[in-house]
Image 1 (tube, rainbow, N blue to C red):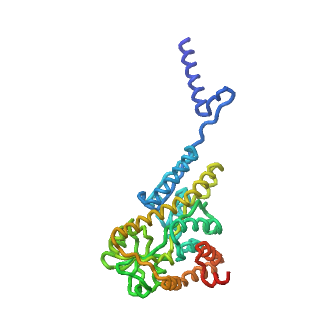
Image 2: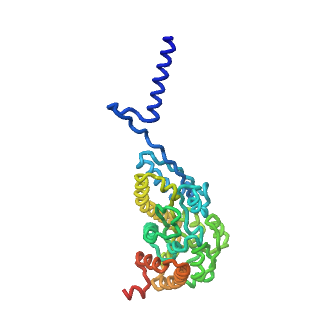
Image 3: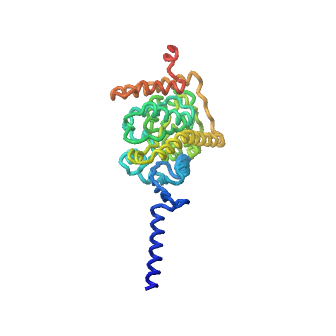
Length: 356
């Protein structure tokens, strides 16, 4: 009997110990238990960039920073290269909860974000840092209804799209007979400049340039190294005076956001604000490496004359007018959106500047 009682006592002590571990541990003074550590919040993050891309790596650093500032309470699982949702389905994947967070391009679903299409217009973005800062600022300022079904954390955007060609391009006349790789908005820019756009993906462009299927490509400088396209061109025309960008959202499922404790939401907001600068710097670093690659190869970098810059700006002006008209037909403030962007970039049309 004494043996049975002893065993029973041991099991009771073990049970009490396990109960304290699950519900809390005794406070130092023994008066009340201390709450157990909160459960870890796990979130999925779908990114269209491959894991090796600097923008994916920058996003991973963002996720790690949130993990550390939350003292390990948040764990964000990264799914790069469109493995969770393809690039053109990423936003809807966030809306429906396939992923909790997503990064992709607004432009990949044309017509889905009519007001924010204004971010990508050929407005003369000087660099990725400026494009990223302005893209985030514009989304926050206008809070468009088209993104109200998610919680936008921040936006980033690449440096100015320029012209890289197999022969020198100094004027619009030099473009007339050229076939230029471009898709979406860049294809429209190419048409207005008088060249012939040829649609194709970035992976196809190297061979197309090499085989003469196209004579040039319109792209950010970073692609000339990142996709090795600098090897199959001989000249870069600095057309940044009409430099377009491609803006990319980092957004979160609304239900997932609303479930976060207030202090965790504050951490997300704080880190995201800092990462606007980080992503802009990453784009500029990639562009600098692309230009260094071009210089290493000994290619020409052509600056447009002031007269020619004005001609190129005038050639693409109808694209801006078309954007405003499209927004007006939908009851959207396209004119105000474009005006603010131009003022921020310091390149408002001459007639507006004269009136000021």
